[in-house]
Image (cartoon, rainbow, N blue to C red; front, side):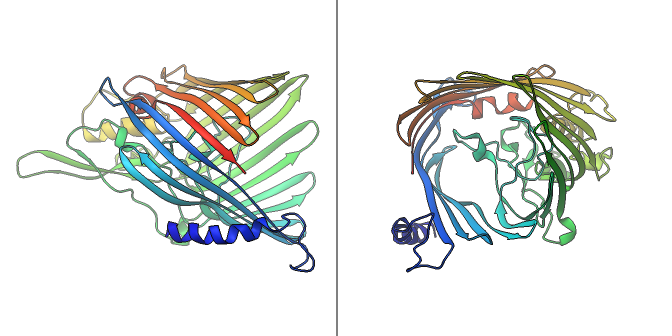
Length: 437
């Protein structure tokens, strides 16, 4: 399939390049119709430590071609698509992948904008951690130098109504798509077997809905949002528990999504030379989160992010405080029962291991050599669980549209935390050479 698509593109692309992408030829094409094509080619290497060994390994190595297309039809609408072709090795397995990252059509009718297709939707004004961003699933295992590549698309309908100074946004997600849960990296007991994820079917009662009212002014930008439906990140539930003929305990656990109501608020403004941002979300589960049979459903919680950013010449610094309060919280007692094991894992996945948690996030960046050299460090530290992530990156523009990037991702934390479970598997150094066009 991928080979056929590449062949068609190689035939079709030269005809696109031969056209003026911004002004169609009135003699050879229809009026007000134009094309755009751009993309990139890159080679990427990720290397790190073998789990439980003092040896190094190839975490991921691949070559990738990315293509972005846009076709416009005057003021009536346009279509957009992004495709990726990747070949290499990842997690000790051969990798050959063709992915349609996004593909949708926009239609403009008066004050309404309509967008239908495979889309990536990002909500929230905070940097890095967005408690109101509950539309787009993510893949924490994605090996890419670009953080945005962790976002995954989903088929949905998105519409806007413009009523200045307000913009109303409505989203309908007819079928659930899950975030990638790194359960394979969790240290489950020997008697536990991981099963396939239980997903809701295509019945329209399983749809998710979201509404957002956005206001923008010279003094303050802000929005109020509401989401009802399946959360992108699932939990883990006990699918089967039995004792075999040898008297051995056997358990099967599977990822399973859950529904929530989420009310969100965000804002951004400036005070003198500082940028101020805030984001808040209250999440209320629709299932019985206190039942032993529903351990995959997290408790209600209130999440908040407060941030400040400042630019001074070529230096930009972003600093944020991240907090969470968990309702109806009860401390877990030490136990080795399957249900308590699952409860511990689900609290770890949902970041609800403590009633009140605090974390800090920072991202300083510095542009040098006429902005051809960029130095950046992303840092996250949980004051409550003592987990941290450090991600330094150096990017150098060798020539126009040709960039070299060097960096590292370092996860760390106690054994009973998320970062403590994925640290050796995902911590790595990386090198990328990228040519854009």
